[in-house]
Image (cartoon, rainbow, N blue to C red; front, top):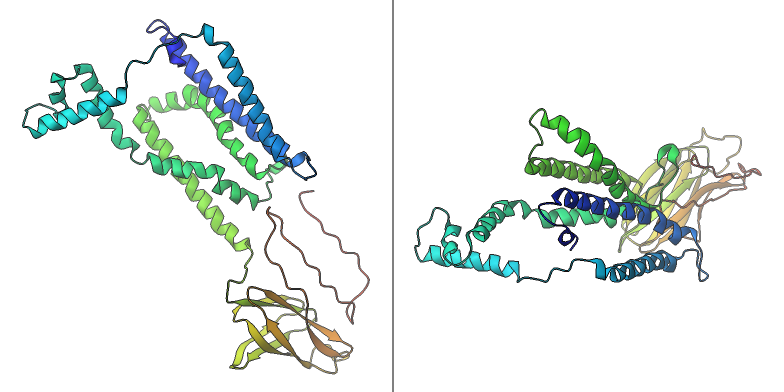
Length: 376
């Protein structure tokens, strides 16, 4: 429709400028909306909620309505070209006719040339050009399937990051998509004025096909980077027991190495030595009843400990993490099964969860607990 407003070939240059400005405007609008919409969603409170999705969706909807009204008001100024048939029908018709002619044994230098007896030669030549480049579009569905992940899986990946961008501050997960229009606005003039002319001097990246190939390679590399990033982030993900399994979380609050033995009706299940003042998680156990035996060596805390062995019964529940506190009561080691299960799953963002278990026994003292972040 926009191209119909220009008179060709007299305004060919203006037509090219129109499409450049049109593409620039689309990405400029995308840049602004991608920055502001998450701010309206998260930083504005409405209807008693901490967020305001109605405002985040409502503002773009109002702007789209205003844009529609402006287009309708300008209708008397537009050049309206009436539709002149369906080009797809003619293209597929010429291909079908050429196949039929080829099947009937009509000779020709190119099988599509047999359609020139029914369709104009220019249309047949255009179809031949389309068929030659059609192979380039075979991977297009795969490319779009991957590209659309920038607004889905990549955004979910960003929710598990802290959003810190050096000294520039932090960005929200759904603001990550601002990189796409930002790079387009920055790279369009850069490639047009500097990069492509520089490569052209070496006879490289001259043809559109060469540029598309280079762009495809760069696009593929970005997904490799995202994949390797996800592999590293997986190391920080919460490890939650699956159905049919249970975990035990041992917290050693004694400044000594503690030896533990875990048994059930079938015998010894696990034997481990936990370092002083460290934690250990025993994973993928069958839910059920276990017996825990703990022991501290005679060389540790000889002036305090008079009883160095103890036992406690543990009931491990399905899909739960049962915490076991290894401490001291008086002069005896004392294992305690905490009533509230651990919840290792993180929140919806990149923030972890912290559980404080404080022992005011032999080694406890009145202390202020302060949580600090390097980002604030």
